[in-house]
Length: 176
Ligand SMILES: [Ca+2]
Image (tube, rainbow, N blue to C red; front, side, top):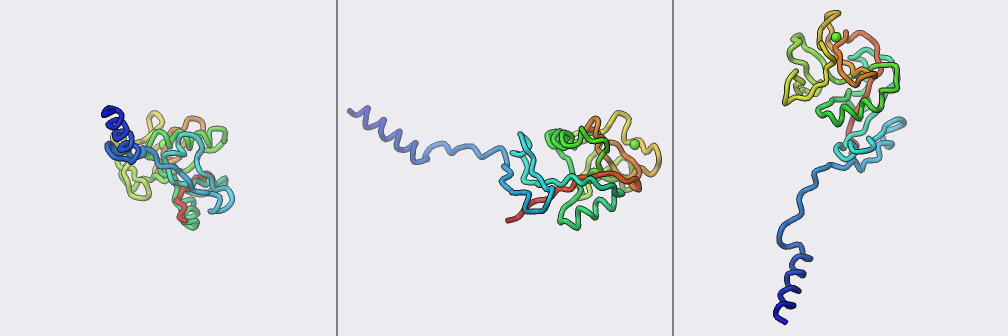
């Protein structure tokens, strides 16, 4: 009898949420309806969807790097910035059937050693900063190669002159 009472107390305490709290969620779901931003805005599907609150717009217009940035800014967004392999993989999955590379929000301010995401974070050529340069890049082959594209064929990055016109990707948050 004493055993049953003890067991009942243990079960009751457990059901009330005492003891060990559940671990915090490791993933940030994207519950946003990205379509409220306008035609073409999408949220990621698959695993990456659970790791980002961002919405994306794949713009099939040809613009210089800086005009692409302004296009995104006019929509309250920015050129896409990639800090993780998971995000790189998802972005690539959306463009690998395309014939065109896409501008990323990565640029050089003079020094080829210090590429910067346009929002200010560094993308140095070694850990802990994520990058996915093609072999031999960034090479400044036709200087100044001051902006960066993701190659549609490989998902890897290349520095090219900012005056070239390429398609691009915007990203932003949705606020209810
Ligand atoms: Ca290059």
